Length: 59
Image (cartoon, rainbow, N blue to C red; front, top):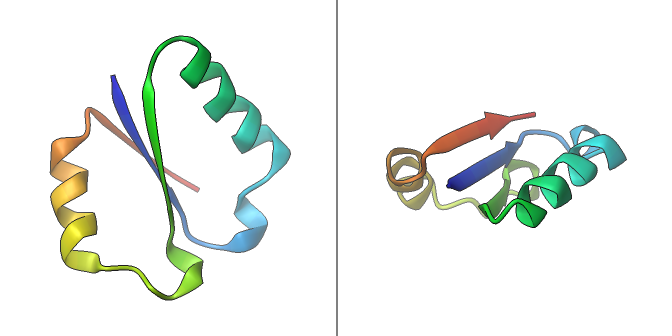
């Protein structure tokens, strides 16, 4: 499964979120992380990815 993580604020990228992502990777999932707080987000690519991925998780 392809999972896209959207992180809106730096404080939201906690150890718990990292642990969840690591567990999903161990299960064989493909994980992509988009840090929206960094300011260099290409929103056209982001919208395309939202529709390409099986699951989108926001924090």
